[in-house]
Length: 193
Image (cartoon, rainbow, N blue to C red; front, side, top):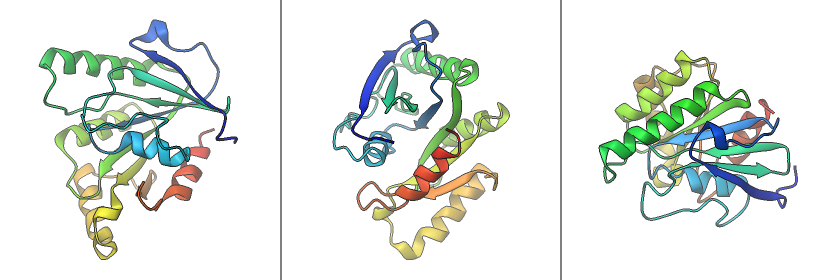
């Protein structure tokens, strides 16, 4: 895959705007500030391809990133962000749900959680939702560089227990800072392409 051939295809608010394409799609979901944009940028070996922001809640549409005409990465709005109105959060929720349930191109969801914390109620709901709808999940525990390596197993165990994790799903400990888990993430994604 040529990582120099990248482009944002479209930022879509709803079904009518999804790209007409037969490319497989890998969606990326996680709560605001979990490191979704950093994860995408690290995978693609770019600094600012996906916009990172100090302001959580920046992604408000479904961003379809075309990776070398091989796959679309679909960045969905972060959930659980308190500083937007309840009405706005509900709108995002409907947009995300519509995409996840109706999009035939969707092959898997990279669900991101922060390794430092027990998964939030929203994280658990997202995982349950994906399992209920039989959508393959690649679980990525981000920000591994912020936890001593000796505590990774403990944190992984806390996350697995909270999510009632299905051991047939991939579990990847990841750091965009030192690229821990980068190869594992790519090999998990490539299984669905």
